[in-house]
Length: 429
Image 1 (cartoon, rainbow, N blue to C red):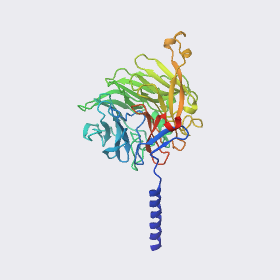
Image 2 (image 1 turned 120 degrees about the horizontal axis):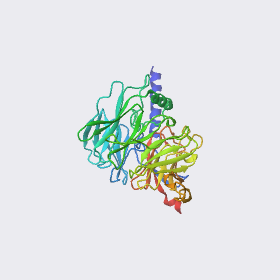
Image 3 (image 1 turned 45 degrees about the vertical axis):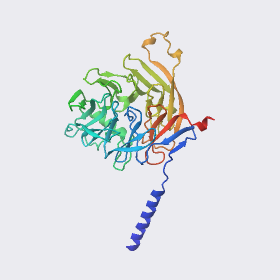
Image 4 (image 1 turned 90 degrees about the horizontal axis):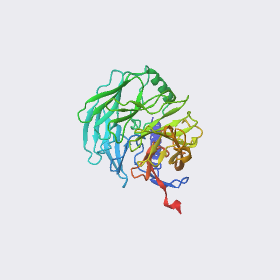
């Protein structure tokens, strides 16, 4: 027994020593493959940036919202100082576009915390979920007067517990949740086939009044309020993309239900839709057909005009994003199990849109009615060759458009990083 205890102590000491000696990820480096400067913004292993369409920035552009083990924190983008602002396991929603308050759900109640004063107020209590069903809030509108969410009545028979409503929320071990988990594809097939009744609702942040604006047996998901119009909501019909008419908008009074894209060929897919910062365009990943021809497409709400930018399979990304001024795009590459499997690279990409006039001449027949087309000129910013794409990096542009923020496990536990869009001075000489 004494020998056993001694061995246990020795093993424990070695394990502890190994944990202490685990090298800390670099704070800053120049990517040798690209010449761009990369910085680590987070301190704690298990920290993560938000999902690509969740606004993480305060309106003054000074602070970035991230998840940390067992809480939420902000990063000062000038000083890089980190301040924990929320303790406990929560589902983060967004940083408000008007006040910068951090909105999140904890134990069935929506709260908002001021990132500067850390004062917290209760915004609204969520109604009880139907028996066997679920309820969630996913987004806050531009003037922070409304929340939007969904109610699901019942669940797929014999289905195990679903993934967290916030895919960025730290799990019980303080690690950011993975986007691509085992069995996801078959789960989506079963969920789509179940046709569970759902409700799309709004909830007043002032009165707590709840209004159901859409009832459906389609799987409603990916809710995003317009960043500029407080009464416009983007959402999707979730499921395997080649089986759904995915991207829709609706007004908060229940009018204006509009499908933004209609599939026209077998195995055509589109999704991972997101707003442009101007609130005038909705962007989405489009493949015609799946894994063959790749586009980043847009729909202009006012005119219905469409713009499609082509990119090669090697440069396709799981998620795209657009800069605040609409002039640049970014992508987070893809892993070995993505739709571009075997071809696409593991990089953070910068895309510069280009349009050929001869492709879009107003002199062409019916030119005004046609889809406008262009292509991307691509620059690699960060190598993610050591990143495990079961965790998707999720790129966003910083408000000053000098950096692209992403999350990565390239050094082991998830951390938050940013890459400078301009090349480092040492590489320009």
